[in-house]
Length: 88
Image (cartoon, rainbow, N blue to C red; front, top):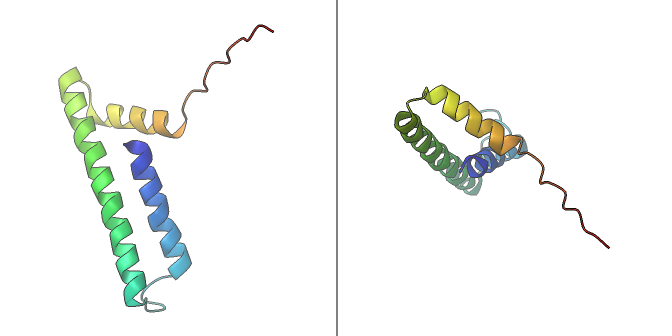
């Protein structure tokens, strides 16, 4: 879930970079609709991640911040897969 939220946030940032600031150069209706959809997707994913993190923290008796930080770290910096030794 965290990876999906990060990807959705990346899309929002990408659109902002591409379109520029809406007050500096007004966006077209299509650009506004595309940005709104991307922003809503990001918000939905982020909300789901936070709700799951809150529930897990409560279930485990841990601070929510610690759980969320661990999830972000694991999603953004996964441990490499172990190399399998193949005998030839």
